[in-house]
Length: 449
Image (spheres, rainbow, N blue to C red):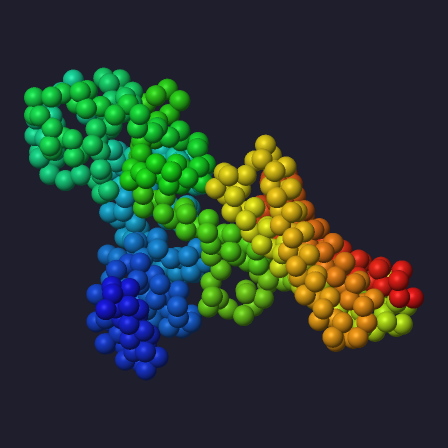
């Protein structure tokens, strides 16, 4: 049995115990779970059981669990906690994790958390909080270990033994000069296996990446992915080392971006609480449903202009969903690829023309293939070549239009600083529905009436 299967069984057993009211066994099972697993459980139960589970959590784990929760669930629990409990939960947390939590705490609680910290940690936290949350400065941890280039590896080893422990996920030490200006890194492997008489400068990696504090979190994640990094230095404009970013923070960014793309295409918040109350959930979805309703009315207006054609050739009404559906699916495929390419930095205006021609060619080839199939089915269904030819032509035109819209809309939205994942789907559906309906009914009006 894999670790994942074992965890799933543990969580399922815990849910069953809660459903059966066996609170004492549930609490025993809860004590053996990792904070991330407790967070998953809290997100997987209705509000009443969520309150029971939260009351069972070890107070020493509350801060770690809060960090693992989605934004909606975390905010709900924070609102129910008193000031002393929140301050206790924040104690002992790493600066970058604490910064993530403090941003969501009430101001009075934040001030108490700051007062409970020593001067050094307080300045570290304020340094991180001075940068936007979605920047390298907002992600970084100021707990760094640095050495000078002129000391020997033996001296470095003695220094590390004297420290006793290193910050988590430390794979290399940062090398700085006497003015704390960043020079590069030296790996722990090199320190351990190298000649003790060698200096740090002899093994200095000057090509190690340096990240500016204002670099967007998305770009940081892409850099870690491209270079297979475990950690990287954050260096300000003067060249001074100000912190480091580790892979665990980058994984969080990647996970949030993935959730954002999926949820935004449905008009939902990135971390929508599956078990949120009925009224809050309804309120969050109203706007997006309203926007979709407006686009549906626009498509209906196109159909209304061809009422006379539909009355004379009722078969066209039965074929409308086919044309609209095929165009919508083809366009969604193109939009999804473009949004992913934009997120990964693969798509720019410089290669957009090639992508446009390529997607139109793919749409045209798919259009020809499926137009032939639909035309043949229509001949069998309605026994007329005229209607078959019209729907085949409408299918081809709509798939060509879907390909063009699928490329141009995400690019245009990105140029306007609008999130393509949030708006492209609605715009695409409106275009493909209107073009598909207008083409099918327009050709029907010309050739059948």
